[in-house]
Image (cartoon, rainbow, N blue to C red; front, side, top):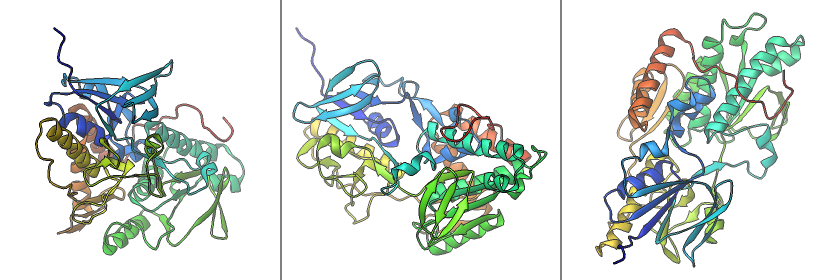
Length: 427
């Protein structure tokens, strides 16, 4: 007698949304295949701390197999998705050696997003974004090498350029990056060099819109600017970058030489819409049905940064980690209800638990809707929240210890220059 074949649920992406779906399906009578092109789950909100030498990559990442090792109905597959055939119900992946087709009964795409350069993709070589560990370590390399080159040059103009850092984009990533770089230069590196004074580093945060942190209330945006000014960061709003190259940026009509440029201005969804051959919005996000299924393919779900959805209360679901986790759990519950012949869960409603952003030591802004906080208390709440949501206990202990050590000593232990710079001369 042949064994009963369970329905197969394929999940693409092991970020917040994908893991949430997988864990919700842990007790269901299904076989789960989780596909990701990397072997680790990444806590993206703290990537900027890897980029600015506060944390090491292992502090904010954990192997997918280890995270889900107790889940017996799940198999992890390492590979890059190249195509999806909805008619045949297969996913084509490339594992680096050969192509593999994986069949599915239900499919959940949680493939996230990458940075968008608004038609200037050539800028990526000069202004890297921040979405992966590779991005973070590349930015760390550029930052630290800029100080090394400033130390070695004998030309004052080149030294000034190397000690100028431009961050493009005034959202949470740009604000947090600016504050962290300011503390790196003015505290952690202050006594490390002999010919330069890192405290004289010029940090410029550029935002095309009228204010920083556009999703926060205006008074918290103003508080963030004030905190950045105290750290010595120059903030420019209503300022558009018109050009970007290896030597610097052009802001409006002004040319600014810079040794390091960081992009935090926009995101573009993964190619999910192209794989599925369905309608997408301007950012490439799939326009999904209210239950996160794809119109015309009710066994395919798209969640997280890859989905465009307005919930049952008329709220546009944002591309943030908590929203992806909620969507992942919801899509899994829809699948479970279908398999059990039960009514679908009620319409998806996004629960906003608050917006948080930190601006260096003991400065942060927090918006819980019913209360707004700024300053040291907001900073402590930000730290507690981020430690709590790290994926495993070892990461929580490591991050808490590193933050405490940095807080007490003003030192950063991850100031390692590794790999090679993608641009510029090598020393």
